[in-house]
Amino acid sequence: MREQYPALLIIVPLLTALVIPIIAYLVKRLVRWIAMGALIIANISAIGALMHVLNQGVWHYRFGNWMPPWGIEYVIDPLSAGMALLISFISLVVLIYSDVFLKEEGWLKIGMYHTLYLLLTVGLLGMVVTGDVFNFYVFLEISSLSAYGLIASGGSKAVVAAFRYLLIGTIGGSCYLLGVGYLYAITGTLNMGDLAVRVQPLMDSPAVIVAVSMILVGMGIKMALFPMHGWLPDSYTYAPPHAISFISGVMTKVAAYAMFRYFYFIFGAANETIAIVLQVIGAFAAIGIIVGSIMAIAQSDFRRMLAYSSIAQVSYIALGLAIGNMYGLIGAMFHILNHAIMKCCLFLIAGGIKWKTGEYKIAKFIEMSRKMPKTMGAFIIAALSMVGIPPTAGFFSKWYLVLGAIEKNMWIYVAAIVLSSLLNAIYFFRIIENAYLKKGQEDIVPASPKKPELPFSMLVPIIVLGIGILIIGIFNEPIVCQVMQYGLPGGGMR
Figure 1 (spheres, rainbow, N blue to C red):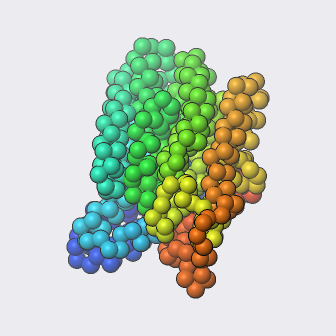
Figure 2 (cartoon, one colour):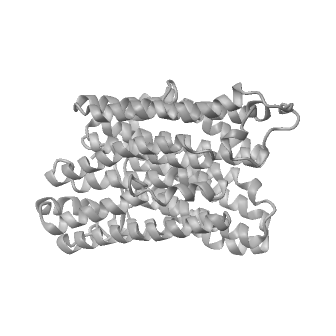
Figure 3 (cartoon, one colour):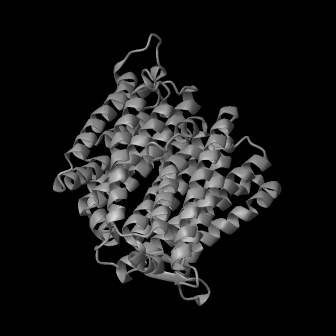
């Protein structure tokens, strides 16, 4: 069974997604447990794959024993295995959280929600482990179509937001597919490893330059890189809280991870064309960091504030890719992990506050610390991490990015990171001020130990992610040295 971990990682959630509607029709209450079981198996498979590659090196799993470039293979190294574990873990945590929102729904909505949710998980997992550029597109479309459906389930405004996301996302997917078509036409292969070898002598050809441009636009849209972020604010604001927590946590980060794989492992950052592209990415990222942070300050809705914050945070990752040295790439990869946990935790908190009080407006969060002390405690940790206060996880990824920028004398990037952290402090400390320092006109009944502030299935995921932010920060060195550094170019595992 251990030899099949890469296949089980995808196949178990996929097959479960296909039978979920039937199970929902027959026995509605079993759906949640079966979906959780599938995600537990996916987590175990991801952990097993990570342990395997840390001990034995890169794992090439070939379907049907067909050798590449003819056959499809999954290629798992420490980074891709770590990404798979991150996706499957957050998927499981958010699924546990979502039970309260779905309890009263009919069998059809419950069945469709869990089907789309598992398909989204399958698509994201497939994107990080596949070694085939067209297979990547298949998983990209699975995840995108599932996300459109999950976002649209939030009501009339969410339907409009999902439709806009569909239009822009389709452009992104089409650009990526066109790029793959150009690469296949000029190299005759779809296998990533084979493509990396064959494309190098052709990097200056017009076809490859067009392909690089198309992939940049396609992945830029999917990761919401400024100025290709137009789909994100409304989608994150109006989607159901139990769906957007997962989508905001990992979806844009998987696209950023894919961009890293393309520009550093397939095209090669040493090439002059790619160096220019990375400079363009860096310029967009630096502007996006500032614009996203300023727009977040201007918001009165907690969800919309988090949405614009995501634009800035994704730009940190892009900035690390543009810096391109070891510190920069470590900072980018580490921020993928950190932001996934931080942003998922914050959206879970937003959903919990809405469930408890019916409010998303920041002005209504006065004395929230007395109503929901544990939830707001987790918020404090996540907010400090977003700002970049040690020993939270967010500090260390920003620290690596600053070190990388200083090493390459990119002082504009350093200024953008520092200024953005100050802007982050402004919009997060505004909420802390309302929740902890301001006094309301009416008496607030503190949360009772006998009556939890949130249902157990909602509170535990929030607390687990809050603690996780601290653990990742405190133990950042082994994560970087044993997982991330070995998956970077020149890290020793390839």
